[in-house]
Image (cartoon, rainbow, N blue to C red; front, top):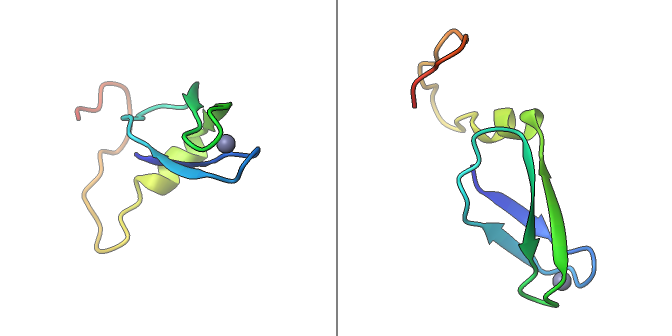
Length: 68
Ligand SMILES: [Zn+2]
């Protein structure tokens, strides 16, 4: 997924060009004020991001070792 991060200092919005496949936290540098932003991706965010907006893709029934 691609995360859109809004800086809480200056309100600058930027896309995080980083493949995110699991819940994690990381830092990005704001391009507006150069402040450090903590980005937290939750499993709910991932689930929402992976939901196709049109049609429906076949999904694995879950379990460990789901291939990319
Ligand atoms: Zn900023």
